[in-house]
Image 1 (spheres, one colour):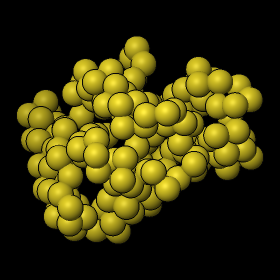
Image 2 (cartoon, rainbow, N blue to C red):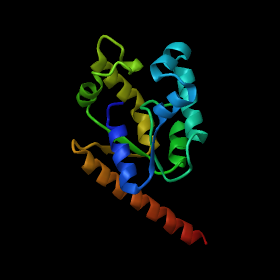
Image 3 (cartoon, helix red, strand yellow):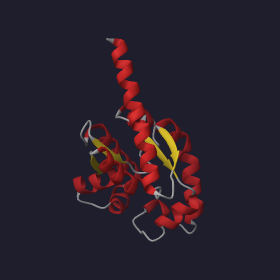
Image 4 (cartoon, one colour):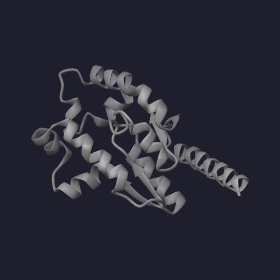
Length: 170
């Protein structure tokens, strides 16, 4: 959360001429509830099941950029599932910047604590091993367009590698 996934994702989709989807928004639409309400009514585990369902079958197989919630990949088997769906990029941003970006948003149920900066640091520490297994990790640039350019290069490189491997198998 707060790494710029939505902002970067929208600009990336535009650069690649793809559709943009945000997993949280898609879940909210499907269940006609906010993420905050889902957490309050059903709990985090149910929400994580909804995320998994979305990744497994809730979006087109190609031609889209998907921004996933920060905890989506942090369950057994999820890093592998995320990677199996396409080119996966994990954005990293300093905790202080994350706090600055999300502090004005009360829709972050995991940060409703007395010390949100410590909670962010704890979440990042807990999630780091999952993130590192989920895809290519990059540090975000303060300039969104630079982050997008970097991801486009990674994407094109990965697609070229897949094509070369496919040709070798023929």
